[in-house]
Amino acid sequence: MTAFDPPVAADRLSMIPARLNGEKGRPSAVLVGLTVCDDGWQVIMTERAHHLAHHAGQISFPGGKVESMDRTLVDTALREAQEEIALPSDAVQVLGGLDAVVSPVGFVVQPVVGLVAADTRLVADPGEVAQVLVLPLDALVDRIRHRRDTYLRNGQPRDVWVIENEQHYIWGLSAAILVDLAARIAR
Image (cartoon, rainbow, N blue to C red; front, side):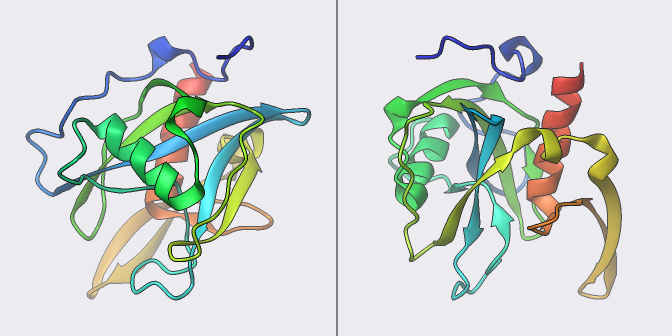
């Protein structure tokens, strides 16, 4: 599919388990879609629809919980990307995974890294996504822009990653995934 070198070598990524065994929580997966254009490498993210009951307006990766039809976590990530941003699974070359992340609400999220064909047309499903974002990868994996922040959840302090970005507030699970990706690219 590609004749270019990805920003992170497949050997720096993890093997993706078929299922998240041993982790307490609801299994889910997201697609960390990387694509290249004239301006360099980009990462595909979404702004969640503002009418949603949970995480409305947040910047995230396409993804969601494992459904009965999903044989693997890769299937989950690809199915969710198809549903949310009309990304055909045959336009994605899966490279591997990042470390699973546990969300504060009990999801165990497996990030799946894939190369997305540059000419792929992405369309937001308005029921789930306000807009598709194709953001410069260099800016998001620049460690100088990464910081830790604390907020209160149910009266308890929680530390989260935040990525300084001029246009979008990227924090929590999405930022943690990008911090992991940055570390693997830097190796």
